Length: 241
Image (tube, rainbow, N blue to C red; front, side, top):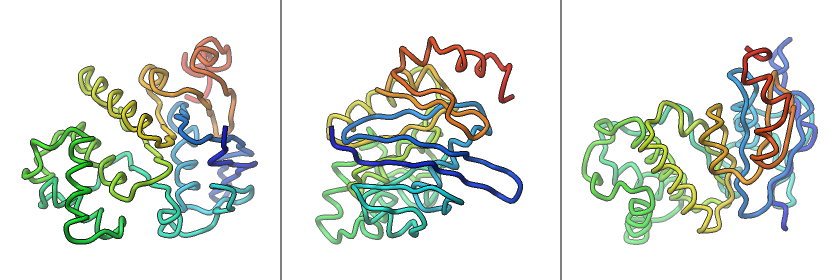
């Protein structure tokens, strides 16, 4: 399979704190990769490194064969990498439709009718067509997270970095998210899901990287990870708490 993303020996330090230490992993095209670990494991820092929010202290990131570490978020977005944030950041006074339209025009580079047509498609994908005219500030947290995913889709990314999209979601909302990510995969989108909720991630990801204290402690299929003694130890709270 074709490799889309390769992170090689990534390290990120903040003063005396090492948030990510010598991390290496790859992602192939049309793959869903999960990154899990307890709070403080370094998961979101990895997303920030890939998306250009941070430059690594050492190591390299390759996307489509091109080295991208240290480039600005704007350039990385134009290359086809989009991300969500743990806390959704909509324009609360704008409607759902208008929020997506802003993304389609500003980040997606579309205009006029083509931008509106793209927003219509995205609304259908994320299941918010019926709430298109409601202000974003009136949505539930789960709906805001779907809107956040929709915002990324307006730029037609090759890779989606999804940060804690299931956190705080109810059982029915988890099912809706599962269906959404399955649909995105069917459309050929490559996805990195960062979560600390293992049960959700194991249903979506084809392969999982487990982090603790900034380091990779395991990598494999969901079945392999669920039986890994190091992972079980971390999630029982004996380490990384």
